Every structure is written in structure tokens, then in C-alpha cells.
Length: 152
Image (cartoon, helix red, strand yellow):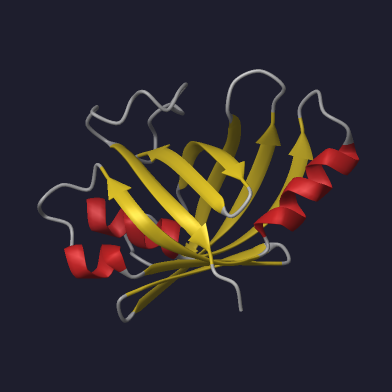
């Protein structure tokens, strides 16, 4: 299940961005900053049953309103929604549209931090509440991925 959830995250995602308490131009800029290809540099919380080699080769590509994921020889797709906040980490929701059967049609709630060419995403299993902070990495069902933007 953990590797399936990771597959979902790595999958292509379609989405819309909207801001909670922040101007629309900031929300649009955040979405534009996500565009492009990102490569995982660190993953946490996936456990020993996760396919380690696949986790080392996760690529997320944000293109327009879509996110495409590739890990090893597998791919996935999902929709995403950004919820920008002034206090606390901004939020991201993924709804899997293609990928592992166990997560297709389900939404994973997460938080993210985007700083330059570094993106950190923490999310939980479908049906569980969104993480509140990045301090929850040792809890069961919580996953974190650090990504660096690829310069093409």
C-alpha cells in the first residue's frame, strides 16, 4: 500500500490552484513556480516494504494543471489543488486518476513547502487527516518526499 501511495504521488496530476487569504496573483505565481520536472532526493516514511530503487528515481512533472509521476518503470496521474495559507504550511490535495488501483479515485491530503528549486511534500494515507506540521514524519501513514527541480 505504501509503495502504491508513493506511486500515486509520483503520478500525473490535474489540478487547480486557489488561495485561502492570499491574493490570486500569489496563488498563480506559486502554481507557475511548480511547473517543470522535479526529482526526489530524499524519501521518508515508506518503510522497508517500499521498492527502494523506484523511490530513488521518482520524478514529478507539473505541466499546466497536470502532474505526471514516474518511478522506476511505473507512472501515475492525479489532480491536485493548492491551498495557500499565510500561517503554517501551504496545503496540497492529490486525487489519483491513474495508477495503483488501491488509490485511484482517492484523495491524499498533504502540506508542502516550496523554496526556490526545493520542494518538500508531506502527505497521509487516503482517508486520514492532513498533517499539520512537518514534525510528523515518524507517525504511521505519514510520508515525506524532498525534491529538487531539474533544469532542462
